[in-house]
Image 1 (cartoon, rainbow, N blue to C red):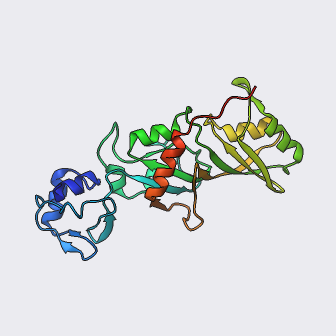
Image 2 (spheres, one colour):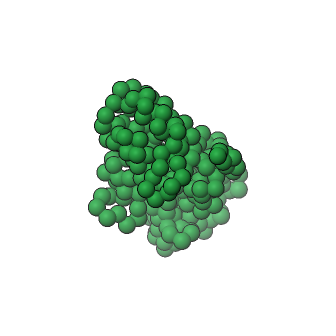
Image 3 (cartoon, rainbow, N blue to C red):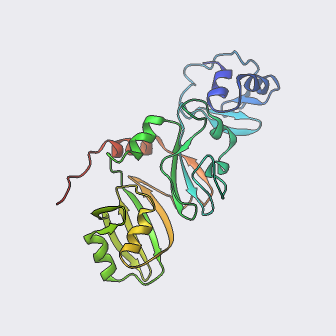
Amino acid sequence: MRWEDVLYTQGFGTRRACRALIAHGRVQAGEARQPVADADAAVPAAALRPGMPFWVEGQRWVYQPRAYLMLHKPAGYECSRRPSAWPGVHTLLPAPLRQRPGGASAGVQPIGRLDQDTTGLLLLSDDGAFVHRLTSPRHHVPKVYEVTCRHPVSEALIERLRAGVVLHDDPRPVTPAAVERLDGQRLRLTLTEGRYHQVKRMVAAAGNRVEALHRSAIGPVVLPPTLAPGQWRWLDPEEVDALRAAGATPPPPETR
């Protein structure tokens, strides 16, 4: 792979723009920041691997054939390329991650969605098969939410949720995979489905109201306390493998 190809696949613009970056001396290779002078120069095969460091306009990057990210989504952002009233979560990411080529649309895509007022863990990727595996209702990947309610969380509320609540668009009771009371007005819900406004509707059907909602985990991946709202990081290879395994897990048997 040539250096032009590296920059292009990582989202640094058109091929012409990538060649211009190299021609103007704005690209360096490795931690030693060796200048890259020729756009057609081949990257040594031993160096071309996921995590290979390089520098563009003074900023450190790592080469990733596919992008797998976690973002701590703050409130006030929409998970949409065409947000209607609030800025999109993509604006929290560097331009190259928004411009990576391939697929039906450029850049990384959110894996599932969070409402604009919901905070917490959001995964993004440009790997279509990975996105599908984690969002398909066939795979039942668990998602964990911390819920702050308007009224105190009673044992009766917990029992109603455990027993299953009926939503207006489905006569079948909807039950969480797990539910526990955290303190006076907070509870933790684990869901394996992804219905529209599911947490808010379940809590309302059980007799309370959601005041704040935070997603803390998707499958085996937990939002780390060191990742501040608005910050992102690459997923570790072990996290990607664990998510793939979670997405391949068959759904639990239905209970009647």
